[in-house]
Image (cartoon, rainbow, N blue to C red; front, side, top):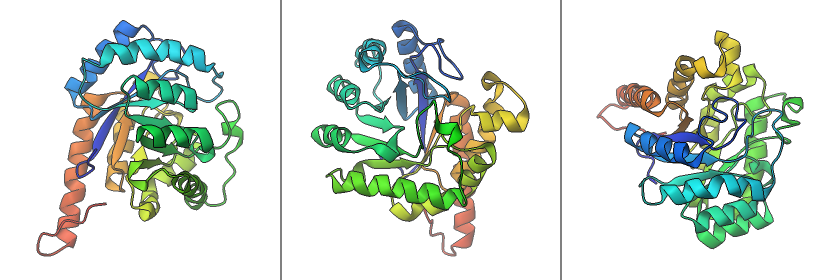
Length: 281
C-alpha cells in the first residue's frame, strides 16, 4: 500500500464488548454490510477485530476469536477490494486469517511480538502493524509511568521493531503505531500526537488510532458514541504532525477531515520550500 496520500483505516469490531460499538456488528451479516459500506465511504483498509482490547477487557480463546472472525472474512472476500487487516495478538489466529485472504496483521501487543508471530508474517509475506502497549487490557492502565512518554514509547517500540526485523520480517512490511489509549493517561496521549515527528526516525509509515478514545471523552465530557467531533480534531492534528494512516470508526467524516488536514499540511510545506518542492512526512 502506498502512503503518498494519507490513508484511512476503518474499524470493524466483531465483538460483543468493544468500548465504542460493542455488539453493533457482532453478527457476520451486519459486519459484512458495514465493511462494504466503509469501502464505499472511502476506507483504504478495513481493520477487523474479534477480541476487545479496551481497558479491562477479558481475554478470549483463539477458538472463540476465530469463530467470530472467519465468517466475516469469508463473507468479505468477494465483496470488498481494499486490504483487510486483522487485529490480533495470537499467531494461530493470524495464520488462519491470512489463509482466508487477510493481508495485514495489526498486533496491538507489539512490544512482545516475537517468535511464532514473526514466523507467520514471514511465511505469508504479510503486512504488520506494530503497536506499542505495556501489559494486557486488564493491566495496561496501571502501567502508565513515564518520565518522557514520547521518548520512552519510541524506545520500547524501537526494541520491538528491531527484534521483528532481526527475525526476518522486512522493514518494508511494517507500519508502526505509538498506541494511543493503550497504557497511557489522557495527557500522555496528547503528548504522543504532538510528538509524532519523533517516530519518523524509522522511515516507516506511522498509524494513529485516536477514534472515540477515553482521552477525547476526558476533554469534551461525552460518551464514546458522541466523540466523533473530538476525534476529528485529534485526527486532523495527527495528520499535521506526521501520521500516514488514521484508524477511525466514522470513515466518511474522517476521510474529509484527513483530506483537508493533509492539504493544509502540504500547503505549509510548500510555503517553507521555495520552488514548490514538497516535503513528505
